[in-house]
Length: 416
Image 1 (cartoon, rainbow, N blue to C red):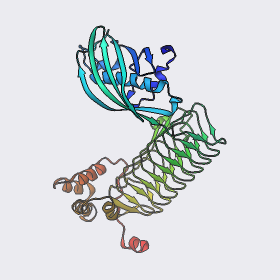
Image 2 (image 1 turned 45 degrees about the horizontal axis):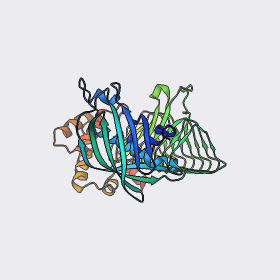
Image 3 (image 1 turned 60 degrees about the vertical axis):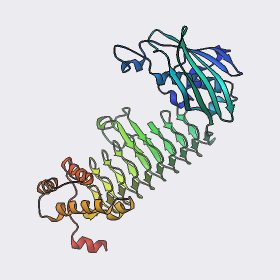
């Protein structure tokens, strides 16, 4: 019976196992509640490089993981559909370590059921090497049912694409062969995802968005490049996000918890942080960096190689050809600075004292009649909170310059 057990396949359904499979062979399997497996400890194991150089010892946490994997194999092997299950190690009690496990040992991993109720199972585990007891513990494991993968019959999903449990693919969506989509992500009708694209958990991609296609750049000649998107992003209708170019670093990266409204565009080799709002038609050229908590207004455009600072606000129809300062309100074509994004900072929970310090820094930068170098020197001569220090560092590291041109009374009246 043990010869028919797919060890690698079952162990993949134990989230704690990454990146080590610590069961080489199952030698005894009793459906009534017992399993014995073997692990051959070799000197080539990756964990020995740091534990410890010159005196290799198998880490105790991996001895526990080996027992958890053996227990997980027992729990999954006789399940009606093991592919829909996942085993979580949720507790370890009474762990004892008797002697070290070293290269050359063959470890015997024995687990037996103590008590099982519903999704929870308590098991006793023991690790032995020959006649010697190496370690022992009581394990508490939980078996969870994975969400069902749903793919509309009209969708075109390449067989090589990797879709996690709970992914939903809507009508006529197209998913390419190198795409990886995380658990709980929803892909709606007619969306297209292609290229080497990784999308995390619980994202929502709306109809007709185009994600991971080749960059719109003449220097791109078909080289292998990537797009990586984090978790819980909302990507609305007709949004386009391109992967990178070989000469630009080969990667476009999107963080988590962002909102991309309809027709927004992120070009090649951009790095977009988290908690960012892209309003309708907001556009990034290539090689743009956008820091966390920024807001880019409707139909605004950011020039290539520019940066948009944290907690900044770009008003609608803004054209930014230089770096946009952190904490700023920046509006217009061409962009002018309207001071501190006070309302945005208040909404994000900044204290009155921190906002006052940022406003003081902006007065020095914009109203002191000092040039930028002199203004920075004056700020750095004063005690600086971390936010102001980050603002000064942002200006010093700018390669295209920063937007420091103030809005005049004429511009303010136009805005009113």
